[in-house]
Amino acid sequence: MLKLTPILLAIAYALVAYRFSAWRTARELDSRSTELADPRLKALTDRMAAALDLPRIRVNIYEIAPVNGLAAPDGRIFITRGFYDRYKSGEVSAEELSSVIAHELGHVALGHSRRRMIDFSGQNAIRTVLVMVLARLVPGLGPLIANALTSLLAARLSRGDEYEADAYAAALLHKAGIGVAPQKSLFAKLEALSGGGGRGMPAWLLSHPKTSERIAALERLEARWTAVRG
Image 1 (spheres, one colour):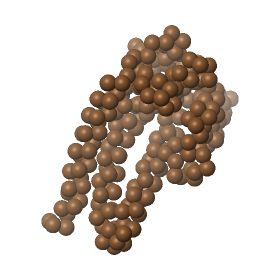
Image 2 (cartoon, helix red, strand yellow):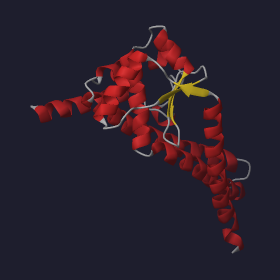
Image 3 (cartoon, rainbow, N blue to C red):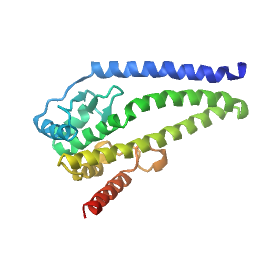
Image 4 (cartoon, rainbow, N blue to C red):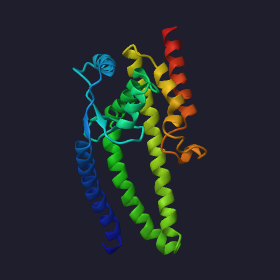
């Protein structure tokens, strides 16, 4: 039983961390967000809602400067103030921003948002166990190895989610008559919009796939759709 104690403690820690993270995230978003009210974007989200047989798609503005979109574990969709400001300044079109909303809807529909919170807690539990084990086997280097292994696992899971959400968004945009072109054109702008974060790092270390790979995946989807129609 004593040998299992560290594992049981790590599992208990993961459950507590999940509950706390979900509560803290919801509280942060509630305190720093308001519902988006923009006629051009609403016209596009209404088209996506009709394609999904939904009465409407609610989008919220999260009052932080970085350019990003996110889906909360409770299913809410957020666009950051920084992203919305780029749209208002003309750097991003309404159609391009709607592709971000479609992408975040994909994370919700495919269960990524809730799973990511669980994965994060689980990864912390795995890290704790690995640190305990590796610290005995490789004194001094154990914690570093544990952190590297769990970071690689997190990046791989996240990249898979991004590809799936991209495909969902492409199908939704196509069905809504908006098309995939805005999604691809936004990807081409992402590095400049986000300040080029991660440039030069290997793709397998990034939580998001490389932009060129995401565009290539969309073009393969379009080619398959064209072949089916033909």
